[in-house]
Image (cartoon, rainbow, N blue to C red; front, top):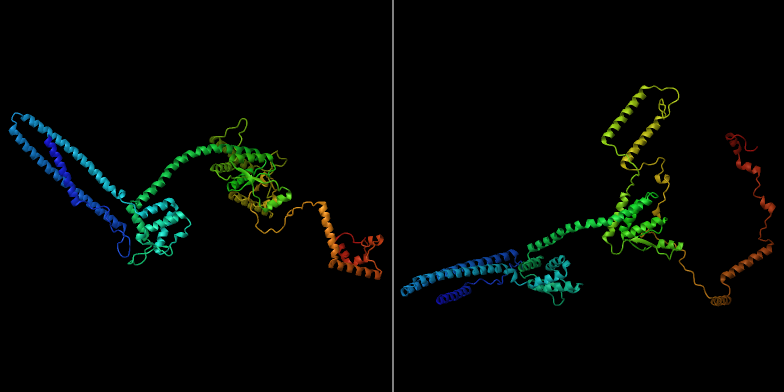
Length: 617
């Protein structure tokens, strides 16, 4: 047994040494060999992705071929070793047969057990070897992603887009313009994170032609010396090839984006199924309160429902509504409670210049105008409540159920019988009217005598028929019938008083013309002055006027008055007019008949032809 174990250990050491020699002699090529994948010809500085893929496929085929070759050699070695072992055991058995004549059975049993042990050990080794081979294949398959180092340009790109995800749409444009010949000064970039990330990325792309001018500090792209025309997509191809080497292919990116889109769509139906019951329970009290308000006040004002809808629409659009102008206090309180239940906020409204001037004239400058509007942080629940109020106004309050016994509606058979009965009655009345003659004498109550011939002229009958036809067309089209006589409906129908006419909106639309009129109370009254100070000021003004003398205008007026008085004194006339009752009172009332006849001329003769009687009697 000891000799067998020593032989096994010797064979193991020899086999491991052969494997190491074979790997040193025919080992696989290094995976990290430098492959010139970027410079393909003079016109382009970067090789295509397909060429790099072909290079990888070639390496993979070489590796597979080498693995197969190693497995075959190992199998050959194993078979040779087993043959040697069998020969050695056979020689040992022959030598033992000569020495041991009495113990034949024991040697045979020992050789059988040894064979079984060798088979077990062989199977155990094969299992371990198969496990090692499978692990090696998996590691070789994943080695391109794990063991390959990440290029610095890819790391810089990841850092830049991780800090600024929104910059991903602008980065390709910058790379295209840089490859097209545009220079960039990163010192002018306002965002320091973007400036730092672009600087690192451009520095990592220096092996591919991106350079920085030392004098100006501008970044630029210089193509290879032998390149023909400038290719604007060369930097994008470089970035794509670097990402492919790092394992970030376009197929992986598309799969990740599609997975990100499908996850929110799968979660959305669950959220939608949970929301409607909560909103329905919240809408119910608001709807009931709106129905109560409409049923209570709609009998007084039929336009309350559309006006309330207009108020809700204005509030939903962001305006504020004031209820201070409502004459009915009960309606005002009901609307305020409804708006409070919706979650609206009552705040001071901003008035424009016209309304502020009116308030100043009325004396309401100190009282601010309060109105209801949306709060600063608008909640979706408030919009739902306003929509519920508008739907309730559109639907109207439910009709009251009649009190007492109610007749059941007729069935279809009963309706047919009633229609047939009325049809037979009408046909019988027509035949009776045609066959009977007009009887003289008084008529029975409820009957009318049939007239002979048309009672109206044919023009009037034709006009009535045309009017009925126009009225029928207007009813079908849903248009109001114009009133005859040329007047519109607003001229004929009296106006209606509504409760909500005095409601002021937050920002009403007004004309934008210039307003040059001044408000009345712009200048505030001055504060009263102390009497002593006022007397001192008056004395100073009086002393100043006395020292100054009269002005030129005062001197001119005084001189004119003196000349006028001198002229009146020299002529002996007085400018004063004296009124006389006898002369002045009857002077305007006396009429001369001769002068009147001269004025009228022959009007009297013409009047006699038209009227009975003369002008002068």
